Length: 223
Image (cartoon, rainbow, N blue to C red; front, side):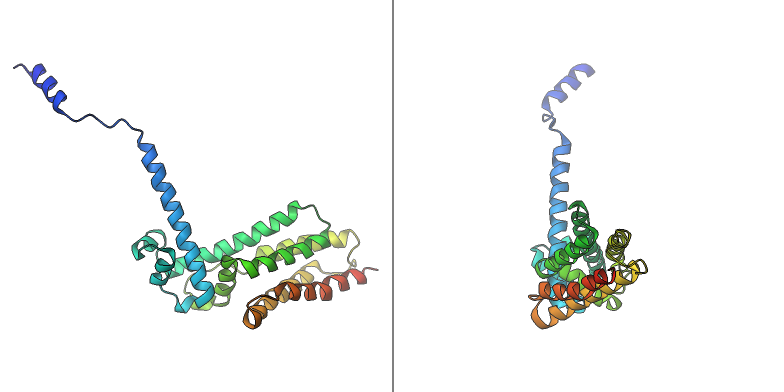
């Protein structure tokens, strides 16, 4: 048998080559990886929110997520990385709330009120927000670089308060920066106290007290 015949015979004996697009398998694997990463992060948020950073283990997170420890480590190098990711997601969520308020086309002082009210609801109802707030309190225990607290949130409030001053809703000599700092300090202090005393069930009421004490006073001073 010549060489060409040998090659033809060998070709006939080989199994048929799989011609299905390889990107389908790759896409499914990527979707599963994204889904698992989300499960792990949600589980970490639940653990951090309820137990606090020092008490949580990677095994706790794996058990809550319904995955192996190896799966957790595939996505996050250690517990500190999980804490960083939860904190970043927390601030992302605050940014989304701010963007939603921005798009609502409210007056400046209405926007300030709406931001605080929506944030209060998020602190009451969203585990990731609760986890992020607790992790910021425990940041000295985490041993990793955490986001600086509440900078973007304060900037949003400052911007609306500047607009309010320009619109004559606040006295010309008012410091938007100072009022924003007072509101942020009052809000995040109030949510902490609400968490400790009432599991944040009364946080909406505490926010109304802050708004009644700070924003109307500032607005009245404009007259």
